[in-house]
Length: 244
Image 1 (cartoon, rainbow, N blue to C red):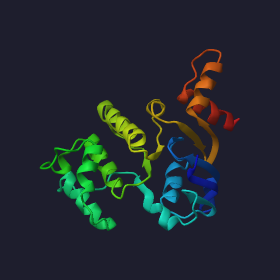
Image 2: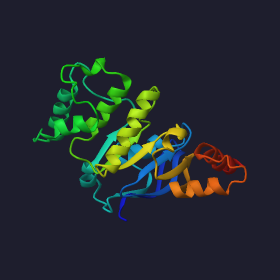
Image 3: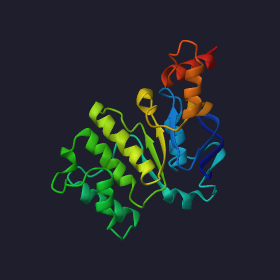
């Protein structure tokens, strides 16, 4: 299976402190890859490097098996930190503005994107009046302009209530399964991430400690004698072991 992202010993140093320390990872086409780690582990720094918002101090990445990152990044959609949109515009108007910014002349994609994220029928409602879940779906909609093959989401369920979290979870699954978009999700809501991710990477103090698949996790759970091992407890076990 082809790789969407390959990171090779990526390092990022800020004032002689390593935010990332020789991180090597591989995301395959079709993955929902859960990048997990505590606050300050380096998740957002790694995502910013992947998306071209920061440059690595050392190492390199490939996208879609290519070193031509400028071209390859045109195939990436991103939602990093707080959603950015025009609050006094409708969802449709925001998407039209995004098309102009990206040089997408054919706006026939807009109804399809609104349908994909469940925001059809919001023609007259301004974005500032959306619920938090709707705002997050609008942010994802904006990232879908240009029909990306790879979607990068940094903490997409932060601040959402259970209904909003469920909506985003179902949207991510739909984008992955129906529209065949590979997804990278950074999150520390591990109970939620375990419902959708197919592969995981544990980032701790700038180092990628382990990568494993959903099947690997279930195998670890079944082998655990007390039967109580889950993603959260396994994550704590791994980073706890790193400290000893």
